[in-house]
Length: 516
Image 1 (cartoon, one colour):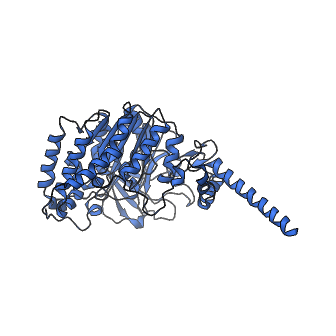
Image 2 (cartoon, one colour):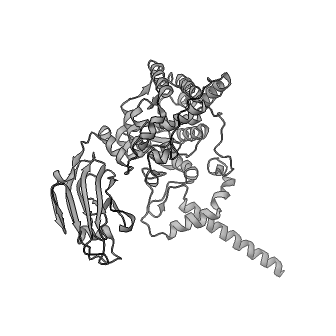
Image 3 (cartoon, helix red, strand yellow):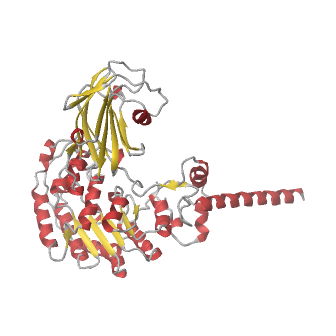
């Protein structure tokens, strides 16, 4: 009798615990599987594409979407919203196959009858892959989040990692309720370096091996993949506009295909795919490989494939303006020019290419095409230029000394509210200038750069600070992205040491301060 009572009690406790756990996960719903995110009570961190993307397309309000592989992760939906006059979501799948991405598009079209615009990247390195290629080779894909089987939801509701690392953290966090923006979701721009030393650290060789042509067997593989995973959905939804683009890989990627003898096959695959797609009236197909100024400048790339976020911004602009579009009338001519370029290019010449010290500088140089903003010297276009423990000789800002800040005080707050050794510049921006470029040099002792850009309310837009031990006495180039700064803006250049422990003789110089 006691054993039966004990078993009954233990069963009741277990059921109660399971009920509490399941209710917790359902209520917080970190993967948005059941309902819209409750941003009035919890903060939702978007950082798991395959677990969260299906919840996004099911439960968010939108009429346009951006999807694709990691080639789409740096897109800003805020830019797409303005350009296309739509409300975008971004649902990328890093390393995603054509089939996986197509499945997501079809599901979004089924879930959301208001969906009218789809932007998708067609990865060129997957042109020859089979239609049923899987992105789940290791068996970790969360299929239970995608199917309509309520019984296997136990894998979500009672998942230890979700309970402790998601739901409980959402309850305990002191972060203000909200959600990761789609501009920031999956964005990797700030975590990598760019240029030839990152893309090709061993240098580039140019061998141009003999390249066979596309076989009939591979042509059939391509036809099946495109028909099933690209054009079938567009035919089912003729009132939806599909903006598809070939991924503009770097010239170093094409060099590999040239050296390995794959280039003819690749170019012929591109031609066949264009031939299969352009007859579809609601697909706008684009190739940006003709922008040889961009694909040959490795300062735009972190590796042979992945371009910087400024290229994503340009892609949106080009597509909206119908630039570099492939049509039935022009695709053969455009791709013939492309073939001539890639088969005759002097790939070894890339070894002489300059690798910019400031990775964002390439984006700054391209910003005039993107926004029309003319580069300007900050010191000649300011409403206010105030010096403190510094002098300006017309070209160099000479900062000296140290601050009286205690080590526990927030540096950015201290600089704008108390003191700085350098200059405070007030300027009005119209949103088109996106980059702040300057040069800096440590002259003596503990001199170090601390540069911050503030909105009118004093909040920080962007900034940087370096420890004096991290820099030498040579001049260095820095570029800060302004993240859409608009209106009255304050920029503080501080070159003094950041607290009272530094030398009073510390000195740091700034020069060539420009907005792009």
